[in-house]
Length: 323
Image (cartoon, rainbow, N blue to C red; front, side, top):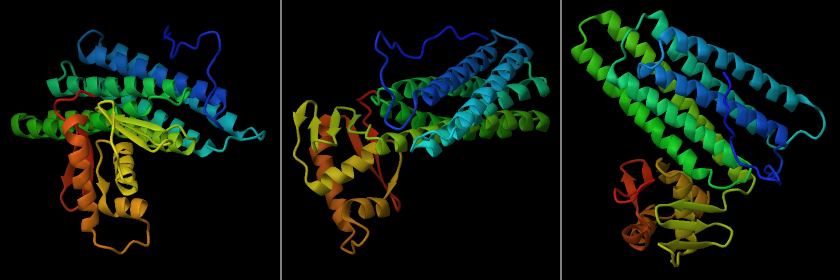
């Protein structure tokens, strides 16, 4: 199935890939995410009743075979002995997780046919939309990887989508066990839900590897959440365009929370990475710094720092700020 889409507009002078990542490998990653997006779009079309399930499964199966070939090409390229990239292991992990995403989409489509599903339940259609949106975010994140810009907004979106998929899986299963009388139907849909939700789990794995790769290659110098912007290299923070003075420790805490926006960062990690592994002071020091950050950032910044009791803190966008 031809894609007919370009991942990025490269213009007359192609942008250079990030240091240590050869253009050939990046091209293969880009081709893989295009293939995943195609498969997710076919799945969604089938769930919306636009394509018969058997036809959709065959199309997705063909794309899954294409993805296997792309993955083999990348692994073979990384085996070439001339100057292997320093981040070759990260590229292998990326391609492995992307291959898993495609496998999970194919597994979900296969079950629709094997279980003789004729009409999807609403929660299944919503799960397919989440899978498609996750594939779109993968597509855009890898597309931005060449320029090392604006990748984090897409990886954060992938974290949020994985959370939504988890919630939908629980809601769907609860509804099935409450309202569906035929146990076979419950088991069928449980299997389909879990296959599709697994694809969002692997998407989040991709997001984690991308974030690590960006940090290692120096591409995480500017982070944005709501109206809060942190320039790591210049050690500056602005809120709604106005500079805000932060202490070194406040800056370190904010940097770590921003890197993991939407995810809980454990107290132990914050203390170890910001204060140092040898810190044995009062742990309330962290709470005090969080309180100062809230006063300086939340009102105008469109963010909120949430306390997760017994675990740590999470930085979220406020309800008044879109992502």
